[in-house]
Amino acid sequence: QVQLVESGGGSVQAGASLRLSCVASGRTFSGYAMGWFRQAPGKGRDLVAHITAGDSTNYADSVKGRFTISRDNTKNTVYLQMNTLKPEDTAVYYCALGRGSDWTYGFGSWGQGTQVTVSS
Image 1: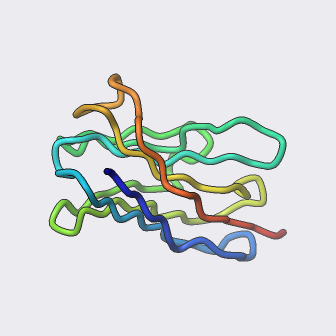
Image 2 (image 1 turned 120 degrees about the vertical axis):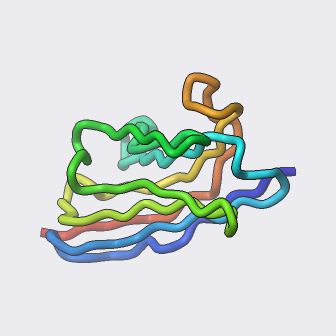
């Protein structure tokens, strides 16, 4: 059974940085895409960034140039480096494990989420 555990959220001022981590267990990690999603209060869950098994990345327009997704297959961990945070980045951030090597297969396993709050 796959388990995803996120960490690194918190409350920061606008302009600050945070790094989220997600550790996966229960499956070989390296052959699958990984993603970060977020859900703000009263809104749906939106894709923030994803990374393929081959390390290709893609980002939502709202975070391009500020956020960086990366993975360390030796640690079964995916990261989201978030710089120049804005109040509109406030949300619960979820890690997701892909069903295949890239995002076209969709995402089938989710973490419990970590709260990020950015104040102005």
